[in-house]
Image (cartoon, rainbow, N blue to C red; front, side):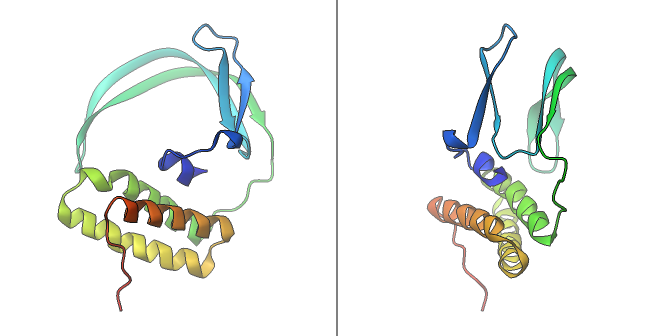
Length: 148
């Protein structure tokens, strides 16, 4: 789900829609397979400028109050090396088009290492996720070649 969300390709059938009783919308959606979800009421919103090594951007600080908490599965799966590698690959993927060429090369090297770890110790979903990222990077014109 993180991969599909990051690549902006979540199929509608992966979402569950629920009615929303607030004024802003008639419907909310959550990931069907999520272990839990919560709904918050926004109390305040503040926009500020954030600067980091990659880029300056506007960020929103939201103060809210939880109005509903729905825990669907109390037995959460432990995090393993493969999910950590996938998370790192997703973060780098989200930044690859806004960094300089040297950083892009570094991100591709890190991607290849993440792919190696996932292929070795990951489950089928993690392997499918890294392949989705790889295909998308290739479609964007990035060369993803293993070092010999």
